[in-house]
Image (cartoon, rainbow, N blue to C red; front, side):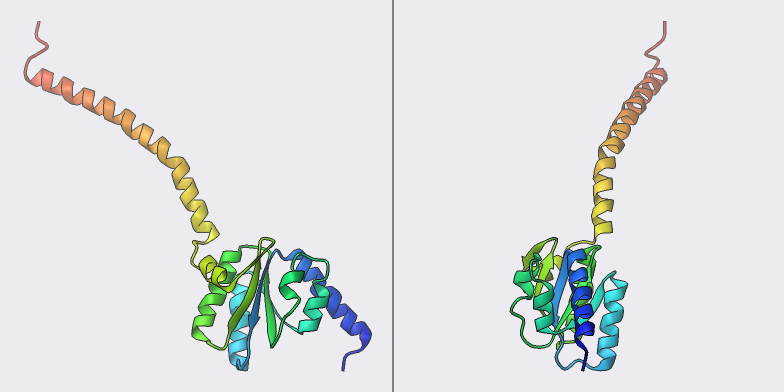
Length: 175
């Protein structure tokens, strides 16, 4: 059994992670094998997140006074948390994909960008394009008008050259 000082260190460490992470996914993991747990941790790490199994009372105490208090207050059953300070879409996609392959892994709730979200919203978040895809689309939209302007300007010069060429061929410019 842990000593009180060790428990306080665990509480402080979890509180610090909750303060630093604007994106938290609360999950259940009953009847997951050790190998499946290893794959889950690997998946979360590849998505840029952290994964931690927590006791419900510890999560409730660590979240006191934080925006995530509402989310972590009344947890029941086996609980784990997946955190990320980076792109929540990438972590949601990774967890949703994993949940499809391992039905014993379930979502309980989520906390994205400072707001509590339902399980349905986590699945919707996972269907969004990633941050990199969105940035590339925005850059394409910014660049598109400039490309169209250059194409239109080239078209005017090309059309003028075609008209002049036809005029020369038909001897329209003879004096």
